Amino acid sequence: MSIPPEAFVLPGAGRGSLQQRIRQMVTEGILAGRFRQGQKMPSSRGLAGHLGISRITVTLAYAELVSSDYLTARGRSGYFVSENAPRVPDLPLRAPKAEGADFARLAQGRFSSTAQVARPVDWEAYPYGFIYGQADPSLFDHQNWRLCAVRALGRRDFGALTQDYYDRDDPLLIEHVVRSILPRRGIAAEPEEVLLTMGAQNALWIAAAVLLGPGRRVAVENPGYTGLRGLLAASGAEVLSVDVDEGGLPPEALPKGVDVVFTTASHQCPTNATMPLDRRLALLEAAGREGFVIIEDDYEFEMSLLKPVAPALKSLDSEGRVVYAGSFSKSVFPGMRLGYLVGPASFIREARALRLMMLRHPPGHIQRTVAYFLSLGHYDALINRMRAAYKRRRQVMEEAIQAQGLMVAGQGGFGGSSFWMRAPEGVDTEVLAEALRAEGVLIEPGRAFFDPARAPRNYYRLAYSSIPPARIPEGIARIGRAIRGA
Image (cartoon, rainbow, N blue to C red; front, side, top):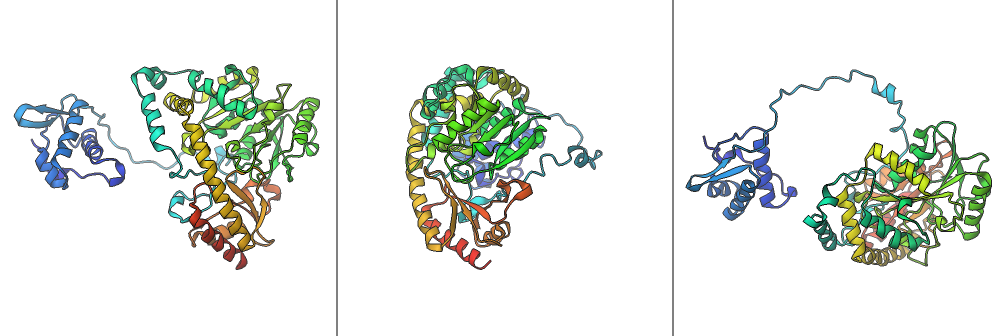
């Protein structure tokens, strides 16, 4: 029995090339059981005519399907669904039932209740998106990333692609982190002192899980990174907020008896403040005197646009009290989710054992692709291109902010990719953000960055990593009009 051409509907244009979409159309039909083994496929001419595409495109797609054993060619008779085509178990579908357990009571909102910065899924559809952490495709080196990814797929790297590393990491990537990335921050480390993670967020979670628990006390910056407070609360530790100033976290303000201190010393989140050298030394001295550990989240150090960035806090650590968290996600692209922890070998040993229980290791193919991207110089070229672009955008932002009379609460002296802003008293930036969405403008309200017990509502963040410079003045002008009309 032949399958009529009318049984085929081509997937949408966003699903790959024509050949890929034809392959998807056929394989989905076979796997769903609509097309049975031994059935004859439409002729390439007939299917091409039905779909309104070239016959050679269908012929090439059929050839691919033959090579993967979904179809078989029988001389002059045409193409048939292969007898060896994959089969999906034919199980009866069961309608979903109502929740039998009270999951809301069991979970107690421990994770979903944490305040986060709201970002719409379709943020790219907004012409004036001042949101943090998104990549600009016009700056990314697609061609060389693709070449590195293809190289990592080769037979020579088959082991890196397919093997279970258990608790290990790709030695090639670790080598480049130790020899190339960490020295830029003044950090000397051995391979056994480095652990790869699924981004900086995962690195911070692992550090917190290893070092904290009920009965422990942890100090965090206020305002601070929104992704940190929730994971610390889930650890069961007592979380203590310490207000930052123009120099970041003040060591003299730390409460007595803390076990761990989290800090973004080189580029404070979200104020962009940089901790001066004397304060860094004072913090390290306090750690040695009081016996606490420091977790240094060193995000965005590559984006030092205005002057050389200060050495990492970890580089000044002579007693092994600092655990350093870094990431490639902000500098390459956020969807990559690859970061690393650097610390004493005894800490990394525990962190590695915990990661093994949770996810074993980051995907080998991503690790090897990043290793090639680093070793061939593409990473440094990308960073230089991003710095130049961000410097230009920052200048445009500064001019537009000044022209609109908006108030900058923190911009940092080294660069970065955002401004920390303060609206007039009485302006709720969450309400402001909703109003601006209707104007095509996205901002990040600041309440989620603060201690929930004492969070002001008139702060907000403006980032420029993904917005074209030509759109910045009009976007800032719309923000200015909205604030004046609030």
